[in-house]
Image (tube, rainbow, N blue to C red; front, top):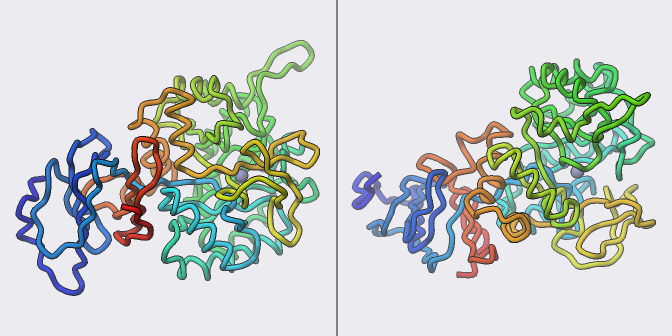
Length: 408
Ligand SMILES: [Zn+2]
């Protein structure tokens, strides 16, 4: 749109205007050199090539840095010393704030397999925290990771609580919260297809995760509502042999079924550059979401930490840029932040900037079915914006038009 005069915009105390100018603006369609964005009352009202004449607006000179949609992390357990299962509002707010400083403007707090009482406590704390979260990445809703998983693919999930899906049980869990938007489960378990249909009917994203399914079982899962794959390559089957016959596993299914969206922990450690390249080559940027899957030590340094809630979490050690079980036989979550994921996709996997950004903005928004509100810089969208330099170091984070961090 032209937007040169913006005569339709009337200034008064309620119409809060913010202009970002002199930036390299990333839209879903192109990179606008020397672009500008006008925000009114938390929404984007104009995206322009060149400056926008607008008196009375608060302004940010982007200083030729990139101006991007805010990052959307659809799978994270915490950060900044906090886990979303700590049972406190402070943990939610603290993790959200830390991630916002790294460019994340919206995230999906994720629970670990735990006792039902701890899940219910997390629901009630989430409910309080969402209204108090002013300076942190917004909460999009909860992701339940477990407990309906294959024991053989439990990873760092607590085996005491892993079980088959039972309708009466998950209906009871859902009755305690309106905030669940995503639930990961193993589709080969008895009752899992019914679970997938039920989640899909309720508008909750059923995701395939921690699973030993064959490709036939994945196909049937897709026929029963599952559409998304939780952390591709982590906690899932590859080609398997049964009595000399080979079967494709979940990993092959990710590449076999184009429609299946995937998420990847692009911390540079869970997946080596070759696998990042393979996934990108085969799935493309419209089917991949970059996730941190971060645990509480994200944004902190190395040393001992706790995976899961403070009360009954598991001792782990953070070293070499990743959390590990104490015996170092498996990773126990990442310590990544979203800016690192983008940097890794570009530097380790050779992905162009606009595709790397798509995988942490538009694609996760589409997977969560919020692309009409978030994930791109076009008029009418929520003003969730991050400004960063050529090294993807974050300068400014804006959430719903509010500047929550600014180093410019
Ligand atoms: Zn996780």
